Amino acid sequence: ARISFKFEKAFLRISEFPPDANRGFDLPAALISLPPVAPRDGHEFGESRLLDLVEGVASEVGDTHSEGVYMQGALLTLPTPDFSMPFNVTTMVCTLMSLLAGALLTTLTRRPGWEGFRKLKAEQRKRLKSLEKEARKARAGESE
Image (cartoon, rainbow, N blue to C red; front, side):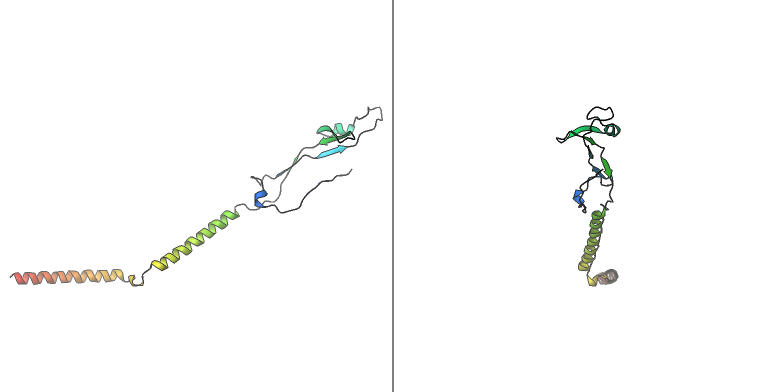
């Protein structure tokens, strides 16, 4: 018996994988060609006991009237890459860019003199209240 098949060993690109890559790849049905059977042992010409034992659909192959059997296809499971990796990389890059943009915006908009702004405002309010009290006293003293 002689078995031959063609194959190409290559890494598949992400666009060459089927939509559900974890399911696997469908291999097409195999064709088994059986040579014509010569009459002997009381069988008719062209009758094959081997062909009767093999499951499949018999057909004539080529001009030599050899018999062919199409076998069932197979499902080939290959190791699949992690397809979520582009999403993970995009998420990580966007997170780092937003952190960088936030830090840059904070640095650019911070005013160095505003650290003591609340204390300064509170002192100014106290001073204004005291000035207001003094002005009221002065007015009250003038009106008398």
